[in-house]
Length: 420
Ligand code: ADP
Image (cartoon, rainbow, N blue to C red; front, top):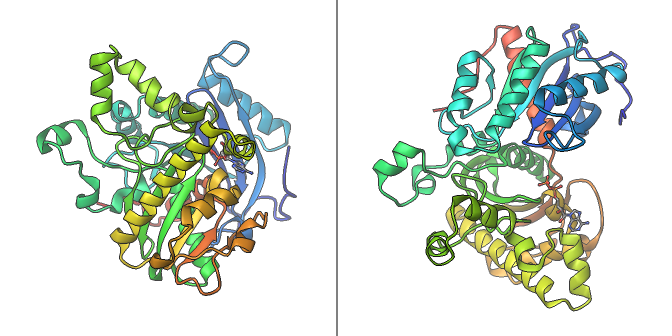
């Protein structure tokens, strides 16, 4: 289903260059895709509200499961068929590039890169750090490359936006030789979301990102907080993997590192058991049996104690990070809520910011309670710190990065943006 009217120029930017980007998010059991026309949204960072148009979106799910397609090759072929069925085939001359979400970029990939054999080998080398995600991402890239070998393929990493975090925040206090040998350090994730939302927030405030210090709270099924000084990330809650930090739908977030050791000793749990416990049977789900904040809210309204406890643990952790990142930044101009819970749960926003007037954070309870879909301020008029709700759009951010890189190459412009 196409959710927008096609642009009159038929997918080419001024000058007739192709302007459509196919964004692929290949997970372990699904491939999600969006086709975005960048023609009107390339001149600045303004995001879809000021240009760029989503032409279509969809997903092929249950890869490798009964009743689903057997593998990523078949999934991408199905994506290609679906697109062709809508007159938007992969063979279309309007397609400028394919952008791939890649979860782990390690210390090597600190910005988006054009895919080459060497880049593929680099992503492969990071599989031990992201054993579930990177192989699926790689499979998607390989098939897309085979289907359209002439097209620029761009890898956009979840970790890249956090590459600016200083060593003091990125290092774990363990034996440096062990840490360095095995890549044990904080990388951070959800980078495309934190990047997109931070720019959108600066725009909402009518200021340049370089002038604004903010705390971004990405609260979806996965959840992470980041601290940005002048648009540059200086700390984040997720670590070597997306398990650290906030309480999530099914993930524990922060935990005493001795807990898995204890459970290995007294409960005989092995690495797989512990992985499953901490990633899939913890967080809100582990605390109350539900991982959807809507259901938890409903149960709380009926006086359900387990649901109330899950909510309280979730909010307590969130407040800890708001406090910690306030100290990291020194001056905070904005606290921003995004993703499923952040954008929709007035109760979480209210509880996370209650009583923080000493930090300059004051919510407007009426504004906060209004249901709306766009970027908006929910702080009280006199609040020193702006509290904002800003919808995230990770696919648009991937498309933006992809198009920039693909266009740069075509025009002989700057090559892969690699910091450090
Ligand atoms: P993902 O990490 O899967 O991309 P989302 O950002 O879509 O997740 O967030 C999904 C979560 O958002 C759901 O699990 C649900 O708890 C929460 N959510 C969605 N809508 C609401 C709502 N109206 N009120 C509270 N929570 C909501």
